[in-house]
Picture 1: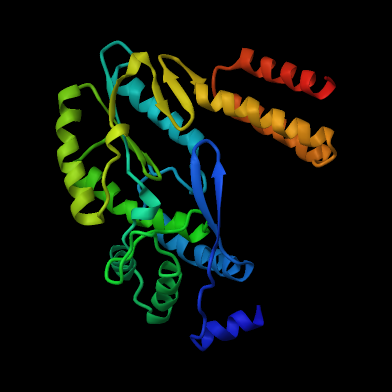
Picture 2: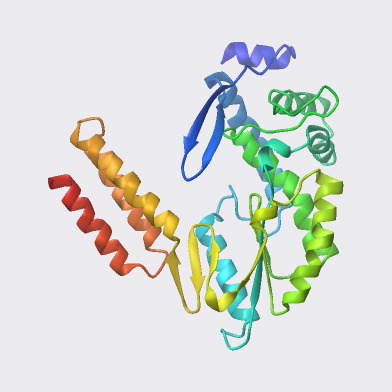
Length: 305
């Protein structure tokens, strides 16, 4: 810690390299883990910058923010749909989009310029640029560096700061009222299907021109609300919510894996019970009484087989 303080004061600090590994939950992600020394610094930077930037974010930005999260995001979208459809008494549609290769596409130069708009201190900017430039994707060249590591606490904050530019465009330029975003996934609710098709053009232009991002072509969809809207692991249906099928299957698979680890003595009883309670907590946010009972029964069966 003392060495870290000295290196920061003397500007000799240099971010260390990352350890890369893959996770498969639910899709393959390449995670990069920083050293303990660097992670301590990431937490300090986050604690200093987050209060400054969080108050500038829109209410309907739900990723990695205190008092927000996936459940609040789902509830907000559900309220939007009910209001716009007049409690499902008229047709309503949802435009769902996903930014392609989001974290690996974030442009370093654009991010640094956004940060400079609120941070005048040169020493702080030197440190932030050091962290940002510590990682880049394989598609980067000397003059066009981009990419943030999945796994850094600072990456979550930088991602929100980066996409806040898009949020402002959506709310203040396009004046879209029924809009919500979680990281790189966003939703727009409207009773006009043609409007949702037309609004894609300025959205794509802004992302490409201002942030050097693009929408995933296979993840652009317009859903009919009464048939169900898939968002953040849940399916929002008229007057009730269900757990998404993929999420349910993953939950049962993970619980079985942890049951096997517990029976092999590789997992403590407290950790094992916490896993079950965590899954039941996820289910409590939807209409899943029968599924909760099935999960408890399966848990008992696996434990005693």
